Length: 285
Image (cartoon, rainbow, N blue to C red; front, side, top):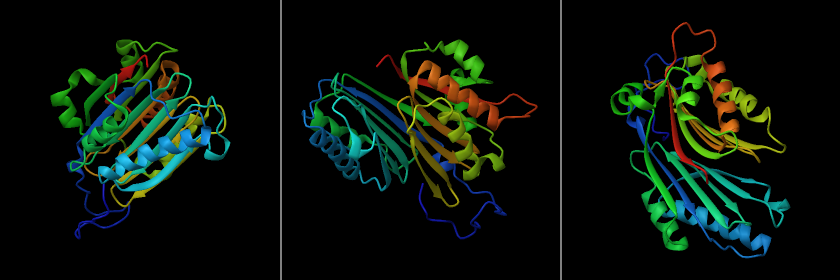
């Protein structure tokens, strides 16, 4: 995503010509688990070390950082608190989750940028921490036509069908990549998306939750959410793609609850079966 607007395209949602956002049809996802990561016993130094790692490796990859949110807040971190730092980037989002008890670090990146796939960030992170115990690189497809050709086994007509096939264990941790295709234009407006996701994520979360959003006019919208139960990162594609990509990290129950709520809002009163892509990126971490 960038702010270079073609001259023949009007800015705003009443565009007379449809924005061609097909260059973002296939992005990249990187999910890694690092073990025995020691950021020290001092809470402030631990937070700063994790924060520095995130910023330095993103900047090494030339990502443009638009926003950063910590959970819990930097001013009230306890010795046993799980740290979650996430970034909204001009082409993507990134989340780092560190558990000081297990010394395990989770690193997840989604990028739709055809120019930056996060590999330099990944290499720099490995240089700092050593090789991860687990690392998964996946194609993130937000074009329905491309998905039908390249990964038809990942497409479903409902979240219920996906859950039956994928069999998400209620209390096991998952990282899930999902795409909702054929979204009506009115549902791709940022106000509708923010209301939809806030409702889905906040309904059973323990407070406080932290969220941030960024609008790319006219390309789309990015939203990230953090809480004790979830991490969520959403990117919308309102042009020719008419889809939205949603990354979720949480238990099977938490992930399914969000997916079902989003499906209900996006496809309410729809007469034909929707098309939804659901991929388990990682589980049991």
